[in-house]
Amino acid sequence: MDSLLRLVDDLPTLQRAWEREPFVSVGLDDFGDVFSLAAAERMIHTGLPLTAVRLFRNGEQLPSELYRRNRGTSPRSREGLADGGRITELVARGATLVLEELQTHSPEVSAFAAEVSRATGYEVDSTAFLTPPGARGVKPHFDLLGVFLRQLHGSKRWRISPPAKRWPNRVQPVDPAAVAQPVLDVVLKEGECLYIPHGFVHVGDTTDEPSLHLTIGLSGVSWEKVLRTLVTAAADRFEELREALPPAFSDLDRDALYRERVGLLAAHLADLDWSGLPIDALSPRQPPAAQVLDSLTAALGRAGRPND
Image 1: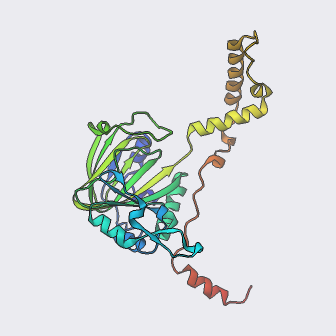
Image 2: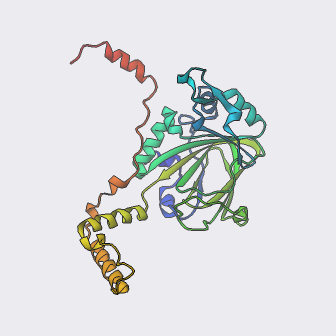
Image 3: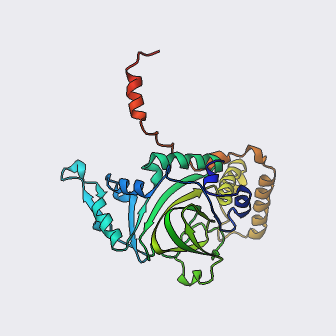
């Protein structure tokens, strides 16, 4: 649980709030070994694919052509890359930089994400947001997964409002008025972390200083997914659940048939041994952590040794 204690200051509080209410943890340790402003700057100048970068200004996403750099003219070099120089200029003009799926590009973030995944049983996705002073990045929105916002540099004001629909399972537009009466209005500072449950509407604005935060998103298995799997398993077992509905010309009592089939399904679900359910098979698979730095050097050293 050491990884979670770098995101929250009290595990019992997290357990009570999980999926139900946002809260802020303060006085956390330095996070520079995982990610930092210097790491973000190095990353944008290493030729990230365009799919790993987004920029926003006043809540609107900017077209990727504004910061695209071609690899070359040959057919093997047509994949667009992010241009670090252009990104820097756009940030200077008030754009928010978003670095997506950091766990696939940073060994340090990948290793931390793997630790959080082991502690929670959830798949972890990591995204960095860099916003200049007095600016808004993304419009009010909600996520389909719970998130931790770990403040790494500067500060950002967050307003969190209750979900219009508890635990939504699809993305929908958010009425900006939804944040008019937030349940939490907080300025997040360096060394603090904000937990936002799945579905809660939120919007962030920088203060008179810039902000860099790392979003740790946790994607688990919903009861909906479990029950869909169990219905399929029940249909494999009971042939009555695979029968087609009566045709329109039939004089069968459809209501009675419905009650019969639902009763059969309910009896099947009630008799299941939950300890034997293959929940692990439904769980998202966390990609393996990237190798630590200097591993290639170590591999070369091993390659020079005779085989055992």
